[in-house]
Length: 251
Image (tube, rainbow, N blue to C red; front, side, top):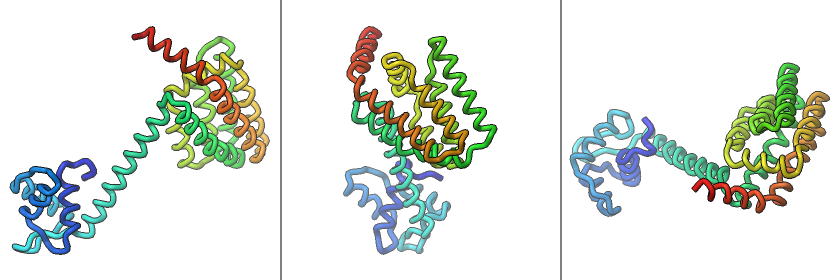
């Protein structure tokens, strides 16, 4: 049972854990009252029975209940879960931000992650994965020529490299950052503004991977993301104005 977001179980466990002696329902009710939370003794009693069945607390006759080692581990796991939720929310806010500094933070994170995925991919990529990557690049070039969106092609290309690194943690981190939100909109506008030279970066990355050259693959990826960061800084205000004007027309 995940008690991280349960209204009563986690706080009751924490109250019991803070006590050096076994406690009863009225002790817990009073502890809640001190925190400004109203709860009945009957509710606390039902929750205590459930926690005992789960093995999170144990009864000591008329003295009340104390927390078990399992209960302590459950509290730690619940706190970790809540902390992870907080950081996931923070990351989501950054990814979908319309603030330049936040957007650049995401790109800087991509730079750190993707220089390593490119390096590892050069060492570990298979011939089949190389052909799949080449197909991604051909699709991108075809869609660009036909003036179609290449946002999906871009994510597919970088995602394939991350996957080919054979590092699941790095792959997951890249996929979290490569959301199909504002990043894709900005990428498309930058492509039209500065010309479609991003596919040239992809072409050089692919050749480095085909040569199994880790240093070259890393440098090509650094050049690519660094150019994107430079363009974002240079054309952000123009993009933001167009984006806000567009939203204004919709409203």
